[in-house]
Length: 215
Image 1 (cartoon, rainbow, N blue to C red):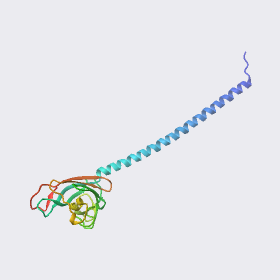
Image 2 (tube, rainbow, N blue to C red):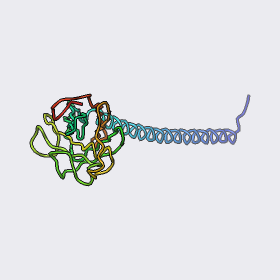
Image 3 (tube, rainbow, N blue to C red):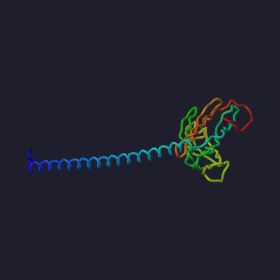
């Protein structure tokens, strides 16, 4: 017959209690770590979602907002060589675009002799500017609309460019550089949201009595 010492029994019970408490501490620590990890994941997921939504909205704005170039025309100079000294672009909003403030448009002009970034000037909005900054600006007037500078659905604006002065890089009338038959130019029209539309212009080989020719 085997006798169990009471002291040994108590010692084993104490050790079992210590092991149980240690296991509980480890379990609680694991739960806390898991909770912290879950919080980090949720925060990261929320941040990525917000970033994706912002990027998506920006991409949609760049695609949807903007203008379409309806038609282009060049004014033929008084000479008989068919040169063009000013250009007009008719623009309208893209089908799903919101309102566009024409005064905030920027235009990049790349021609035969000059590349220039142009900003809006309202000094003489019904015709190409002849002011001292005509080689760095463009004018605009509403051909269809309610009379303000906001381009809305169903409206059209005309953008005016003094090509002779833009190409010469100088507003001095003595230093004009018109476009000649066969010359080409590109205009890139950018709205405030960053969307850009391009128009490619070519001066036709023209001889006649028309005041304007289509480019």
